[in-house]
Image (cartoon, rainbow, N blue to C red):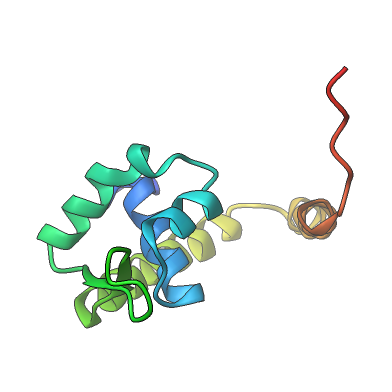
Length: 127
């Protein structure tokens, strides 16, 4: 049976939000949106869906009760870890289909992509 990545029940936006909360801990909706380079309004539905599914909880902030803080629930952590395990398994099988040379090229490309992701490059000024 052929399988493609992304057959899970969580959308890419949902996985992205869960992953961010997993890595960075409790965050405000604005912080999540900024990290995802989106507007908070763009993620409102995603937050609501994750909350309805019991994967995140929304609580009032400790210092400013008007601001909500999103946290990953135990079910959310398990859902994310399950998705990561499925992706890891898929990738391991997919990598086996490549030649040693192709895997070497991917390893080199991964290093370059890592450097690019961490590069501090000034943005061009508006002219």
